[in-house]
Every structure is written in structure tokens, then in C-alpha cells.
Image (cartoon, rainbow, N blue to C red; front, side, top):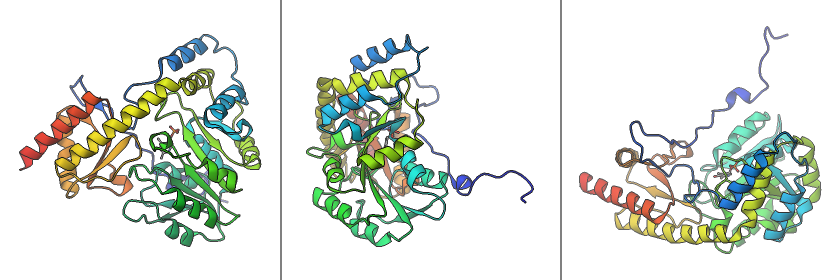
Length: 362
Ligand SMILES: *Cc1c(COP(=O)(O)O)cnc(C)c1O
């Protein structure tokens, strides 16, 4: 018998998640571009719906999210019975690990993959197995080579965060086809709406028994603070996930806010358009300043500097101009800064600050 109570295996392996910074001491004009949030905020319709729901908060919320799932299904052309909603897509990812992984199993993640994958693998006592990426891109062959008979889940983000790159539909299909039936491929499509012509992996969910797509209201819809995400999978997988889901996981304001947000297509489409324009402007402006970046298919750009010292200096300069971006050191990019795409005036401010940084450095 151990002398005292101890946490389950894996729990103490978890390094606490570090979110994007939001404050600069002594400044009121802070521009926060560190968490890939919608620079336009939430849709006014979502604000109104969530606020109205607050007045009814003595009531328990729906347990099956039927209205929200129906709206998501309608907008995306998907079967609502195969949708599951979570407290952010993070909770859907967690339900997947809870239900399918555990002690003695492996979860494959990629070198620059989202930090939550490693955290939730450890939560259930599974072993995260990290696979390299090739030129800041998820590599299907390296992933397939890493799968063993203990692998239960492969997590990829497509488009990736913080890379912003996306696998071609052909490569994604090849990856899905190569995953053994004893393992799930989870395509985390948190940024799918920003990638033109991409269905988030929905067609691969239709084609394979073991592919799951996850989506979120936190990025395009500007509801990161409300915590709503969803997953799409085969009916039997959804049935499994519903068993490990808390019945009242989504609050009343969260359900109503997300429902109004997904129905406000005009707002969503205007945000997608503006993001594409400002993303092109930001990447073009960075390259003009001699700062490298890949073509992003998300709502951020990974700006690559000569080395970690230069990235740190650029970060400090941006902070002195009141701009907070993300230093993705823990994602394996000490030489880079991840900059969320903002409004036109935000991008002007960033590019002017970086131009000034270049002049000081020259
Ligand atoms: C932001 C993000 C999510 C979304 O998380 P939520 O829990 O839905 O807020 C998921 N995956 C990736 C890669 C992200 O960057």
C-alpha cells in the first residue's frame, strides 16, 4: 500500500496550458493578437441571444443540444444525429481520449501540434508519441510509420496551429485511408472556415469509420469566452462520446449564443472575407520587410525571424508599441512570432511597428 493518496498515472506529467497574454503594464491601448480571436468580436445576434438566455438561467439547459445540432447540420450539410457538442472543441478532444485511450495506449501527435493533445493524452494515462513535421507541415508518411498496435488516436490540426499550413485534400485522404481500423484519426479543423474550399474533413468522416472532425465557435465566430465546439463522426462513435459527456456540459447562454452565431451567415462571411484580405496584406508586408512566412490558411500568420534572439527582440518591440502577439516557443518555434490577423487598422499598426523594428535593428 502506498503511504498516501497519489494522482493517477500521467496526471503529474501534464504541463499546465499557457494562454496568450492580454495585458501590458501601464497601457490602455493594447492590441491583443495572441489568441486567434475574432477581431470583430462576436456577432451582435449571438450577444443578444446569450444575454436573453441569462434571464432564464434558473432553468437547466438542454442535454441533447438538439436545436444547436440541427442548426449546425443545416449550415454545414451534415447529419445532426452525428454531431456532438462540447465545452469548446477541447472538451470533444478530451471526450475522445477519455473514451478511446488510456493507460498502456498511445496517442500520436505532431511536433508543432496543438498543446491540448498532449495534455489530454496524459489526463487519461496514455502515452503521447510525437512525430516530426516536414517543413512546418503535417507529414502523413511519418504519422503512419509511427502507428503501432497500441495507438488509439492520431490528432492533427488542419490547418495547423501555429503553422497555418494545411494538408492537401489528397494527402489528407491518403492519411485517412492508411489509419488502421483500431485507431481514430481526429482532424481538428478549428480554422477550417478560413481555408477556402475546405470541408474540414467532413467528406472523410463519411468515407471512413474511424475519422472524426472537430470544429469550434472560438475562432471565426468570436465565442472563445462562451466555450462551444463540436465534433462530427460515425453514429457509433457519437454514441460512445455521449456516454462520457456530462449531460449539462453546455450552459444555456452557450447553446443560445452559438445557435444565433451559426445562423448569422452574413456576419461569418464578412469575417472570412476580411480575414483573407488582411492575412494576404500581413504576409505580403512581412515578406517585404524580409520576414519569412508560409501561406497561412487560418486567421494568423507565423512570422519567422533569423533566430530566437531576433524574434525575442521583435516581440519586445511590438510590446513597446502596445501589441501582444504569441511567441510559440513551446510549439518548437523559438525563432517565430504568431500574429493573429486583425482589422485593417490593426494590421497597419503591426506592419508599422515591425518596419520601425527593422530600422532600429539595421
Ligand atoms: C483554438 C483551437 C481550438 C479550439 O479550442 P476551443 O476549445 O474550441 O476553444 C482547437 N484546436 C486548435 C488547433 C486551436 O488552435
